[in-house]
Length: 79
Length: 197
Length: 199
Image 1: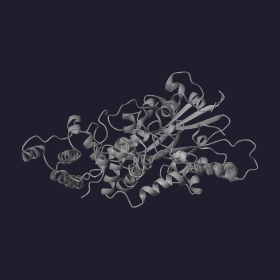
Image 2: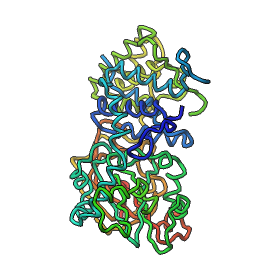
Image 3: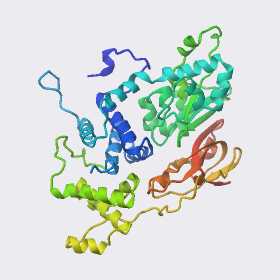
Image 4: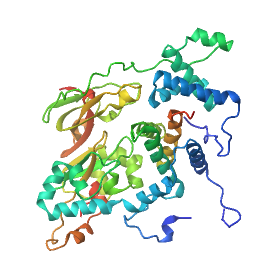
C-alpha cells in the first residue's frame, strides 16, 4: 500500500513518513531521548552519525533503526 | 503478497526490528501512554514548512521583524509560536540578488524541524549530503536552480547545534499582498535553498 | 558490520532466558549506581569488547562484561578477584581508546577566536567520536560568527566529563577545500573551539 495513493490532504506538501514503521521508530527514538536521556539528543545523534557512516548506502530510516538499537545498552537498567 | 482480513502481509525485517524495539522499550516503561501516536501526528500534521513560510512572509511584510529575525533567529521565530526540538538555536540567512544560501548536513540529517518539519528523503541521502559541499553550483542546477555565475553561493553545513533557515528573496509583483497570501508563495525548497521563488 | 542480518530479538521473548541474565541486569544497576557511570560510558564499555567476544556472546553477556569492566576500572573489584570467584578466565572489555577525559576544565572555555580571525582546522583523526567533518581537517578559513557554547561531543562520548566550548561558524572558500578553481562559492561549517588553531 502506498500512502500517497490515498490522496490524503497534506498541509505541508509531502508525507513525513512513507510507511507506518518509519513514524513509529521516529517516535520511539523521541521517547528514549526524553525519558532516558532527559531531552539530550546528543547520544542518539552520535549513534545515527555512526550508523550512517557504517553503511552509507543503507536507507535512512533503517540507519535510524540501527542507531536506536545501538542505544539500547545505554538505557538505564531496570531494577 | 496481497492482504486480506484474515492474512495480513508478513512484517518485513525492519518492521520486525521496530516492533521488537517497541516491545522492549514499552516493557522498560519508557513509552508514555499515547506518546507514539501523538508524536507521529505532530510531525505529520502540525509542523511543516507552512510554519517557516509564515516566518518568511512576516519578514517580507515587516522590515523591523526582518531585522530581528536576522539578528536572533530563535527569538524572532518564537514570536510566531514556533520552537522546540531542533529549533533551539536558529540562524536565518538572507538571499539577495548577489548572494544565494543553501543548507546541508553532511554528517547526518540535521534540519530545523519546528519551521520546516522533517526533511525530505533527498536531503538525507548520500548524494546531496556529499555533493552540496563539493559542487553546489552543479547540484543546484540539477535540482532546477540555475544561478548566474556572478551570484555568490554560501553553503551552510549544520555540523554543530545551529539550525539554518534560508530567507528567500521576495518575488517581484507581490507588493500589495497580505501576509497570508505571501506565505502561500513560499516553498519548502526555497527555505532549504535549493530553489528560488 | 555486514552480513549479520536483522537483530534476532523476537517481540514475545521472555525477559530472561537464564537466571544469570536477571542477575546481570541487577549487577549492572548496582555498578552503575556505585560508579555513577553515564549512558555513554556503558555504551563505550560494550563497544570496547573484543569483536570476537562481542559477536559470540548474548545481549546480557554484553551487559555483564560492561558491568564487570566498569567495576574493575573504577576499583570496586580486582580482576584477580573476579577470576578466582568465577573459577576461570573472565574476559573484560579492552582499554579506552581515547585518552580519558578526567579534567574537562572548569566552566566554559573562553573563546579563543573572534569574527574575522583566520583559523586552521586541526588535522587530527580522533579514535573516538567527533563532529569535525573530514573535508575541513587541515584547511584554513575565517571565523564569520561566534556561536554558543555547547558540550563537546568528543568529550561527552567517552564518559561522565562534560566540557562546554564556544563554537564558531567558519567560512572556507570552496577553491581552497577542493583545489578545483571553483569561484564565488564558500562553505560554512560550525566547529568547536578545540577543533581550531590560529592560522
